[in-house]
Length: 283
Ligand code: C2E
Ligand code: CA
Ligand code: CA
Ligand code: CA
View 1: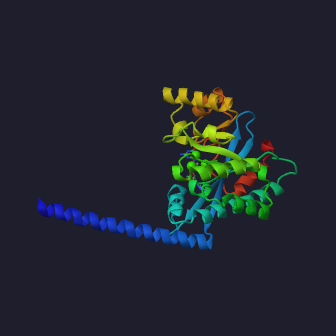
View 2: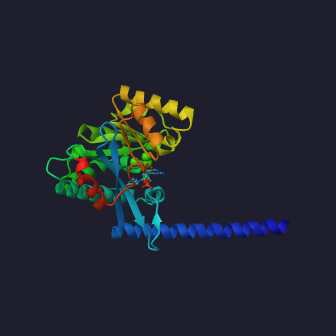
View 3: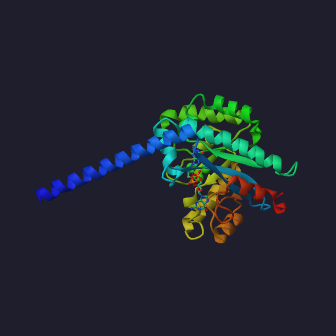
């Protein structure tokens, strides 16, 4: 038994070592990817439930590593935060998305999609950087992006130590016309205190929550309450991860404003986004 115990420990050590090596290798690849700017961006439409028009798009980052494997942003964004590269990665995404968006809009019929907005995710580390606003303003100046089209998607999970700075960032962005949207609402321990700290233009219901609304009574009841709460506080409500017509029908019945998810569209390349927006049914 003692030997088996030792053996297990030895095996455990080896596999732990392998994990550490693998992770360091991935971190190094991520550092190189930042230098080489080897990321891609996808754009997922957000559909207005009132008239089925595309009211916005969300920018989603993609990274294909040196082995040609796609690494999920849910994995490499936290990694970029840990190794201090989130500022660079996030700002690369914002600047490229703004240029791509400008390009798409300039090719569309003049005057169409005037209210189309672009949602960009900002992680907690980005928001707690006291120079974030300044650098964002520089990017907006460089790209000539129309500021009122920008929506920042933030979630409430930032470290309490950085909360004060993050709130200052959001207030300052709001003052200059950038909309603040709460991401992943209903996931983990979301709290309602966000409604008291800064103006929230829209609340995005997390996709794990959307997944249960058509089949689970308590999720249905809570979603209806969230829609009412958001509306009474002057926020719009967007459901993420809508995959079925049952979910769509329920959300429409409950007065949800907009939806995003595979039911309408996957995240698209910039060319596919252009084709979709250029479709006369959409203008
Ligand atoms: P998120 O902000 O909650 O983005 C929505 C995620 O749901 C995306 O995953 C999207 O591809 C996925 N999704 C959309 N519709 C459906 C659906 O109908 N069903 C299912 N199952 N999934 C759907 P993705 O692209 O893997 O991104 C994961 C997370 O990574 C994002 O979650 C966001 O928090 C983060 N992220 C992505 N791009 C960026 C970025 O440029 N900056 C920062 N800071 N974070 C980013
Ligand atoms: Ca988001
Ligand atoms: Ca989300
Ligand atoms: Ca998120």
